[in-house]
Image (cartoon, rainbow, N blue to C red):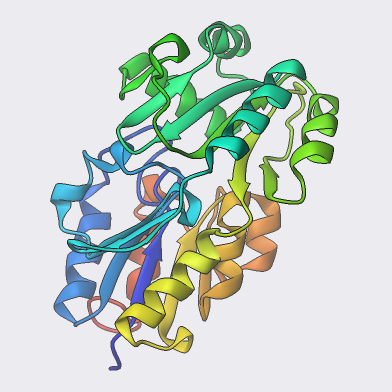
Length: 281
């Protein structure tokens, strides 16, 4: 079999939302794929700091910060934080529009005071995995610190959250030429969240950069994801697979759907497509 590159989203795909512990079946799939000669990359919206609990598990590389930081083993392939002017403009218009901000840097993340209270006020309502992820990460103190502790480090992307879609209208006008607001579909309770990502990169461009670096064609790529911030990745890879409890839009886009991660879905998807174990079993 030709060597492939497999790209894995984390929250809702490799792990349950907010968790840093993949099920053993998922790691069995990863190890089995590597034993067959394939590369396995994390492909995530998380910044590099948030990956620290997962990096010791032996992945071949990462596409972090939605493609803003790409690494193969110890080699940095791509590194593109915001410019100071971009950062200041984005931070100002988001704050003035009443949007909660979490800036993601190489060494950690910094969040607006008041965001935790906003999340707690919604409890566990709805099925928005991104909301649950941020709530659990805040509660577990995964190096997400108060904005008052931010000291001007380079920012790769900004996670955004607000109580209604209208709060993003002015930011889109001001920032739309240089940045994409990748917003999750709002649920029945009306809150909306997402990420502000530089148009110079996305998960799909990250996939392309890895392929060029390793000299492996896109036709030999596979991607697993579950939410709208996986769209660029799923559109770029040759074989796209969405988790069964993922976004309806992503399930429609993907070439195949596998069971949820809590039902050993990643392992089942690897086996079904011959990425590990015996093909077809």
